[in-house]
Image 1 (cartoon, rainbow, N blue to C red):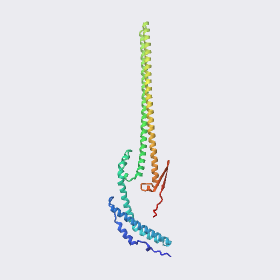
Image 2 (image 1 turned 45 degrees about the horizontal axis):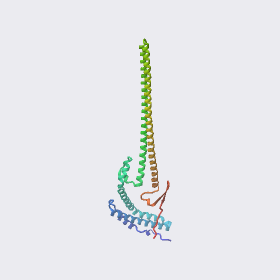
Image 3 (image 1 turned 90 degrees about the vertical axis):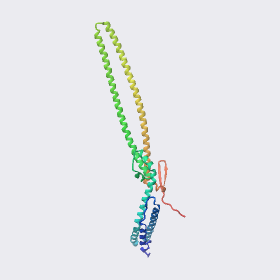
Image 4 (image 1 turned 180 degrees about the vertical axis):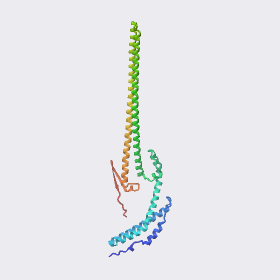
Amino acid sequence: MTDLNLEKFSPKKTELQELSVKYLRLEIKGVDDKVGYLAVDNARKELKRTRVVISKTGKDLRTEAVSFQKAVIQREKELIAIIEPVEVSLSEMQEKINIEKDKIKRAELLPARQEKLKEIGVKIEDDFILLMDDIKFDSFYNEKYTEYLEEKELKQKAEQEKIEAEKQRIEEQKRIEVAKKEAEKEATEKAIKDAKLVAKQAETDKNNAIAEEKRKAEKAKIEAEQKAETEKQAIIDEQKRKDDERIAKEKSDKEAEELKLKKEQEEKAKLEKRKKYQNWLIKNGYTEVTKNDYRIEQNENTFTMFKKIDNIIIK
């Protein structure tokens, strides 16, 4: 029978305790502490190698006998528990510094990002922007830009409704003006008629004079009617000219607005496609850190992602 002995674990428990105590007090004093960072990195790697050896030893012992398995696992956990907290602490320490380094690198992009967000009316804290890589920032910007376009479209719709209401008010004012002119015309015609009656009554005893006044009144009536007709036609012609100009302008404005809206909708569609593409990248784990493990091919509107499974160097 194979000799199953927990003493096969190497290094020993006391050695691991010494190793743990040795690296427990390591620290990185800041972003510029390269010596401290390197010491932590080397310590973490040594602890990791030791942990891997312990795990491998435990695995080998477990395969020798099922009955020995529980004891091996217990010893494995006991030994790893000595050093793993220190490893985790060192790893977290490194990760914190790595985040600070990334924020320093992204600080160069901060003015451009703030200006880009300012153009669509978005103002956020610098620290929030520094936490985002390029993919996350683009996704955040696209989302805010879509909201900006939607809000702009609502404002344009409200403005258009305001313009339509103003048009209706102007049309109503025009109708009132026409009615007023018609009333004035009727008053003028009545005054002419009354004048004729007064003249006729005043000259009843003078036939010749009555005939002459009648002729003059008839002539004045004809001239007044002709003048009124001329003025009426002039008003109609002027109104038609103004209406034609207004209709032409409204048509031109409408065509310009429709063209503008079409362009904005096309831009919105492009942003939606880009947002969909960015979300697809994030969903499949494609980031600035992992992008070298992927390859993306495009066939018209279809994108296909290939992921590198593994590689090996054989000498």
